[in-house]
Length: 325
Image (tube, rainbow, N blue to C red; front, side):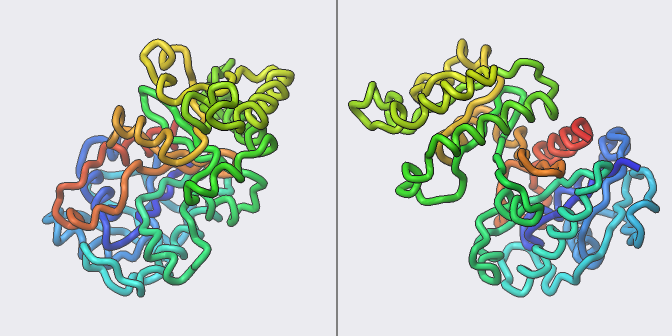
């Protein structure tokens, strides 16, 4: 049976709030695919009380013995106990709980009938017990033994992917190699076809330097690394542009003729999609043997437990997971 697993992420944040708020709406049944929450039952019950939401929480043992979604009912798979269920403050004692739930979701999603949707995590908290943790994307790559991985954020307005993710800006130039760019563009091209059903993807490649290096006058990475990579990619019939200046790449005309952008670093493209689509965009992990989508926002400790969490991105992540699966 096709199903979606939801890992709410940081228990002190709004991850638990999202599913509690959503399960009371008509969307919960209309999506027509079972959703199982990987969480401590007590956490969900405690948060529901705080949110003044009357819900029923059913624990399940076998993921294949699940029911269709019913308004006001959440099906929960307990993997670990949450040490502290209070919202609004990070507790180091909860870090292992977050990782165990996430790892279970990743492992189960290796089954082609199962998709994983993730809520926001606190990297700060997870790093307290796993020093090399840098985010969902890299952890999924490691857990699945994938050769390469690509983070893509998408909305109805645009799709942006990132060649390098959570690394200091000063390290980015050394990481941008011809091999890296070829790998990332090929993942993007192939999965735009397989996951998004775009037959002939049009990809725009952004330059690393201002004005895409301006012919080598403001940097040589475009001339020495990016352009040779594009030449090789085009020989494989991949429609990718020569490096473009990021300051003009998102004009309305170029947006209309582009299926996805590949930026060189995190803050080169994410501010654009968040300015245009924050709250309605999603994060999708490409290049791995699982279907994983996620919300586009953080843990929001300041509003956790208040009932003010916006569920729009969560809904979009669920819709995308269902469509892909």
